[in-house]
Image (cartoon, rainbow, N blue to C red; front, side, top):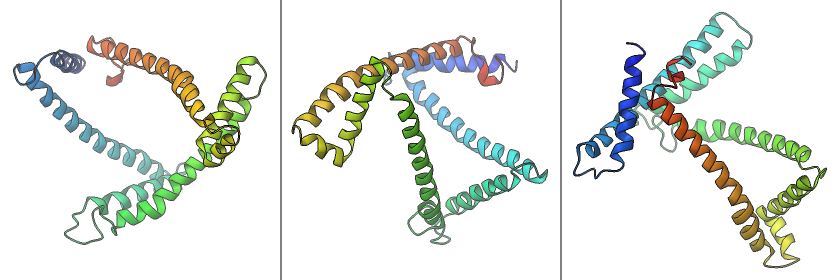
Length: 220
C-alpha cells in the first residue's frame, strides 16, 4: 500500500490536470477540480520547504555535534539560516526590526551580506565561464572558427563599448547581429533545445502517470 497509494494519487492528479485542460472550468466538474488540485500542489510545496529546513538542520547539526570535517562551516550554515529566517517570520507589529520591510534585520542582512556574497559568486562564475570559453573557442576547425567569430560579435554587441566599436564600421551592424545571430541562428538552436526539453518532460510525466517512474518515492 505504501507504493500503490502514491502511484494512484499521482495518476489521478495528472489525469485531472491533463483532461481538465480541454474542458470549460465553469461548466464541468473536472474544470472545477483543477483549481483544487493546484491549491493542494501549493500546500504540498509549502510543506516540502519546511521539510527542507528540517533536513538541513538535521544533517548540519549532526556534523557539528560529531565534529566532522568542516563542522565550522556547517555551524555557520545553521547560524545564517536561522538568523535570517527568524526575524523575517516575526510580525513587524512587534518591532520595525522584524519582517522583511526596509530597515528590518532581514533587509540589512540581505543588502549587506547576502547580495555581496551572491555578487562574488557570480563574478567567480563569470571568470570560470571566460576560462572555459577561451579553451572552447580556439579556432582548430571550421566549426570552432565560426563559433569563435559568432561569440566575439555577440560579446561585442552585448556591451556598450563593444557596440560603439561595431558602429565604427556601420551603424546597422549591431542590428544585423541581433537579427541574424540572436534572432536567427541562436533562436533556431534554442528552439531545438526547448523542443528536446519539452519532449523529455512529456516523456517523464507520462512515465510518472503510468507508474513506471517511481524515483520520487526513493525507488527506481
